[in-house]
Length: 194
Image (cartoon, rainbow, N blue to C red; front, side):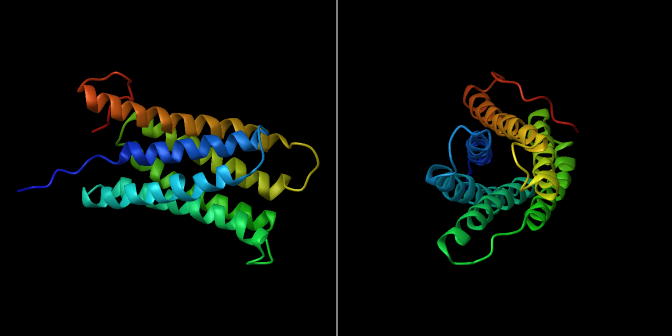
């Protein structure tokens, strides 16, 4: 008897989306970088996405496995980069240039994942394209603007881009759940390309 496995895509997208929106609310200056964001980064953005990726592996979905496991571990590494120096475990925080390189490489990875979404739906294309833009805006900020006084323009743009990116992932997650439960399109995410 064949085992039917659930689609964990909505879980992974919601975990990514909610964590991204909350971090960018912080970036927009609504509140400080506290335990709420860090806990979301570890448990929901991090572990929930890795679990979703592992379950998508069982379903044979290479794209979702790669995306969710990778971005789950992105959140875990980001939290560690932010927290470990503050806890005295490592004395050195990454420099602006090093952190820019970290974000640039994640953006490069996301470009290739975006190319894969060209065979998927418009909702996922929106999520991944906006994430490429977000990573590279944040990389550019760290390369050129970090340490400047005031609120640099690239960071201001990145804040709103991050909220849009996270909100688009939340939308696709909700659409996949509702469309699946009702067996019809309640929230459109666009057609898949053959």
